[in-house]
Length: 307
Ligand SMILES: [Zn+2]
Image (cartoon, rainbow, N blue to C red; front, side, top):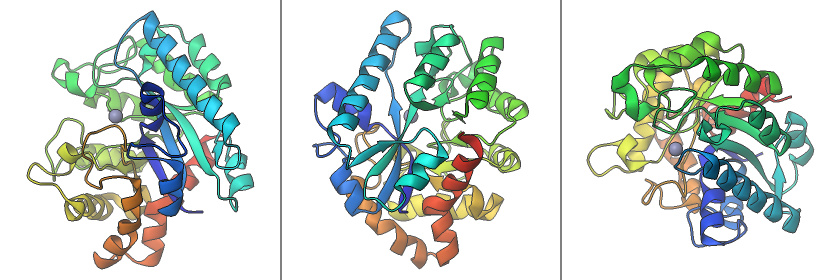
């Protein structure tokens, strides 16, 4: 089992550009991911909008994924249960776990979540930065809002169905609402430490401690604005892994690249993930800690949350 990464936007991108997941001109494809040692990738379905058209776009992205899955059965598999991971452990296919980045597509109708679950969705983020019917987003933080009643119901249903709840992009208040509510571990799929880089999408020490208390994890991300304010590089990214490990423990740290979600990630594309292990070793992480960050923490969480 190789690297597990908690966030990328390859599906939205190849849908938009009419390219393939196997090989493409973006930052992530199966060939490069496999060569860099990636074996499981969370893939977001994303569109920035509200209303009816949002659901249609998400469904078309889902269709794109299923078409690719049918075309390349030896290279791709869909993660819907922990058993899927175990069955494919020794194969070279890359596992994809589908994530809905923002609850706008539900349009306030919770049954839609059940339908998307039947189509393979296994992770949901309530908001993408802005306020919607479920919650306030991270970039709306000044309003002080958290979850609506519908947002709470969505969290409960998602966890009952065996879906991950992803707190990236959620307001601070919403974050703590979910932590109070959750009876399973949650994730923050792509964010860093706010103490090192003061951005509203990064997590405060208080949030990081609450996340550890919940048994969740944070996928440290290569989004340059979340890594450092001045010329962010790989060592600045490793600083976040070191800081969070020191604050709450290595068992709550994972990776969430955001490949294909930003123009210039701190590592240019997934092939550069091969640089990570030596960089972590050089900064004093031992073999066991590196294994936890690169894969084991996330696998352990999936085992607890997925059905
Ligand atoms: Zn995002």
